[in-house]
Amino acid sequence: MAEKKKAVSVLLNGLINENPTFRLLLGMCPSLAVTTMAKNGLGMGAAATFVLVGSNLVISLIRKIVPDKVRIPAYITVIAGFTTMVQLLLAAFFPELNKQLGIYIPLIVVNCIIFARAEMFAQKNGPLLSVLDGIGMGAGFTLAITIIGSVREILGAGTWMGIPVTVDLFEPAIMFILPPGGFLAMGFLVALFNKLTSRKKKDKNECKTGCGMGCPGCSQAANGGEA
Amino acid sequence: MKELFAILIGAMLVENFVLSKFLGICPFLGVSKKTSTALGMSGAVVFVLVLSQAVTWLTNEYLLKPNKLEYLQTIAFILVIAALVQFVETVLKKMIPSLYKALGVYLPLITTNCAVLGSALIFVERDYTFVESVVFGFAAGLGFTLALILFSGIRERLETADIPEAFKGMPITLIAASLVSITFVGFAGLIIS
Image (cartoon, rainbow over all chains, first blue to last red; front, side):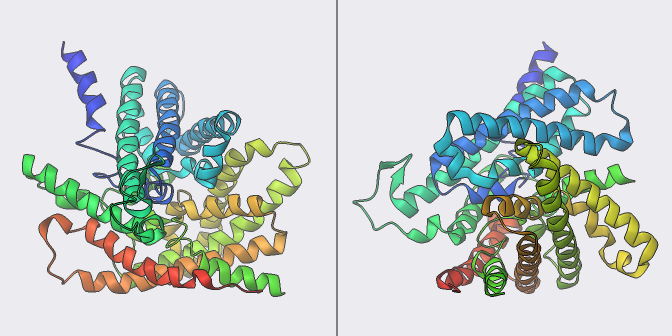
């Protein structure tokens, strides 16, 4: 029973408590770059989830064989392998999406979320929990960037998933599909997320987000490997 | 010569890596709290970018292309970059300790900086020659430096500002970044021919 409970909490952890995008602020580059449309957010999220689940599984399986000193290059190779798979699959089955996402698909390799989960979770847990963690984190990431994409698409183009929604109500503000809109929408959404979750429980260490936990989080991990 | 100049200005201002291509956002948000750390990080990025552009270009041209292994680009590039960063770190430590002291702490962070892998993928996409891709890497690094230093100045001011509770920390930083980014949209019309 306790086991089952743990599995569920691991799965749900990524959605709200440790939402990789809104809470941990990991993987900001794709969250901002590809979210000009909700559909792209969904596609990017799915691709990253695939890599996350695959690499978490493999890393949790090889964690005892790989010596500590070379674990960083080993993990990077595993992640890069899965990324290449996604790249080839997308090119074969969804050429349109592949073209839209462009270089941000291969850039999944350097997405902090995946590396951070490998270091923080898959390295310490068994395959089953690691896969669940991958699914949870992937779902949280997908949810977050689909929301960002939706906000930007509705405000910037007046459509959602390509369907006209508010085109007749107001003139779309093109700025939202341009780079500044990405930063702006993300800023307001993170603030909203902070507001909503802080009401539930007072977060004592506020600087857990961003600078503290973001990339320095995974770079610390990288640092540890070099030592 | 003219093309190289176009690449230089283009990569630095028109398609600034951080503010319009969203590459290297993590260090941009992570180390832009103080101008001095921003300078150190940008120095390391420029250095590694130029080297990695040269090395990945050679890898692609003489190793991957002749063997028809282009589909391994992502894996090959990231490994080359990781090895290069490690190599640079070791060499600097031995040969130029003063430079190592200035850039040292930032070097390991660069492997996971998407600007480095990103610019390698871009030169493949655009079919740049060797010189072009090195110039592109240099210009992208300069653009990164420009954005980081501009932004660190703003963030030093933000420290003392009175900000609503929910906006403290990252949200206000992102909104400030948005405003800086608007100014760079102004360069979009700049075409060098």
